[in-house]
Length: 161
Image 1: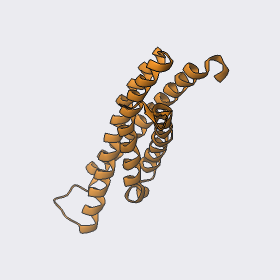
Image 2 (image 1 turned 30 degrees about the vertical axis):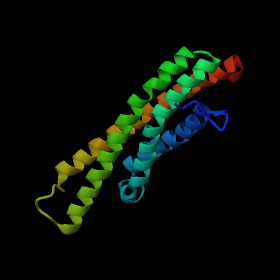
Image 3 (image 1 turned 135 degrees about the vertical axis):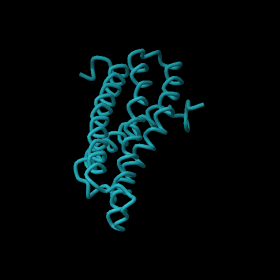
Image 4 (image 1 turned 60 degrees about the horizontal axis):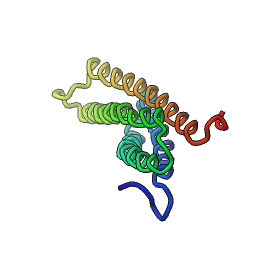
C-alpha cells in the first residue's frame, strides 16, 4: 500500500518526517516537563507532534517493508524500526496526561474549586508524570538514534561512519 509516490519510494519521505517530528516532540516534552508555565501554551503543540509521529511510524514501517522487497532485507534496521512505536506511544500518553493534569490543576486553582485537587498531592502527581514523560522522551530519543543509525548503515554501509 505504501510503496511509491510519484515514482519515489514512500519510506524515505515518511521516515524523514518521523526523524524530525519525534525528536521535536521529545525536546518539547523535556521543555514542558521542566518549565510548567510553558505547558498551557506549548503542551498542545507537543501533543500534536507526538500524535503525528505515532501516526506516521506505522506508515514508515509498512513502506519500509515494501522498499525491502525491492532492495533487500535490512534485518537489524527493520527490527529496530518496528520497536519504535513501543517507545513513541508511551511518550504520547504521558505527554497527554501531563498536559491534561496541568490544565486541570491550573483551572482548579483559577476557580478555587475545593472539589478539584490542587494541593500538594496533585502537585506531586503532576511532577511524577513530568519526570516519567522526560524519561520516556530520553528512551525515545535513544531509540530514534538507534533506528536512524541502523538505517544509515543499511543504506550506506561503512561509508556512513
